[in-house]
Image (spheres, rainbow, N blue to C red):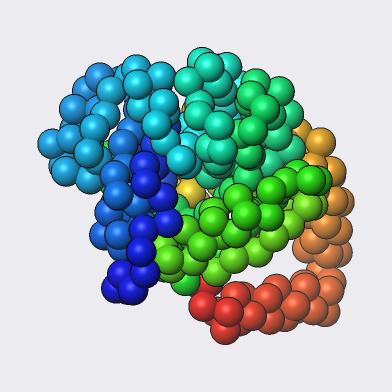
Length: 297
């Protein structure tokens, strides 16, 4: 992608310089989306590494210093940390600034961030549906969002101009845009993202509880399926702890449905109901093909 337009923002502040934050900062710089991009992280070492890697113009643990002149502030911290960060940065936000985020749960972000924002500051929650199992400022890359969906969940009465600017930022990063009601987002992601992670953590946890000789053979002879589960289960543990705690209702609802479906398959295996198994596997194969056709695999 090449930069074909003027910068969207004068100054963007990235709060939390991990995989998503560092990737967004790199994309903003590479595609000329802001005149300057700065960052803040509670770790001085992370700030120093970001400056060493060269994708930020300034970085410091001092939130106020980084957000003070920013037109756009993007929270790239675990969902559970959003309330504290919002409270700390609120006195320093300038009128007209836009606050967004990248979290996988949207109702919690609106609940925890909105009350702290001063009058005249706009909130446009967002969720780029992209990532890898790696974390930290070294893990980011500018093309992470290419061809991936970014879901925006503005609250009722949100500034259309602010939503349009955040949407355009993600478009220029290569994302496909979707506007969604926050509660609906949380339910959709419970099945497409949160439940798969919960299953992966459980399966890999089960393997870790096996006797040592069996565990070593599981690792040695891992087939594609188990390798995929270990990749998902290697995701940031703090981030995913916060996802499950902050989207518990939707996750528990989907988990109950999954448990019922799993029980039905267990019954089919027990009673040798091959037709039931084949019908289920045929349906799920079609979903996989749909994902490939949508270029999301």
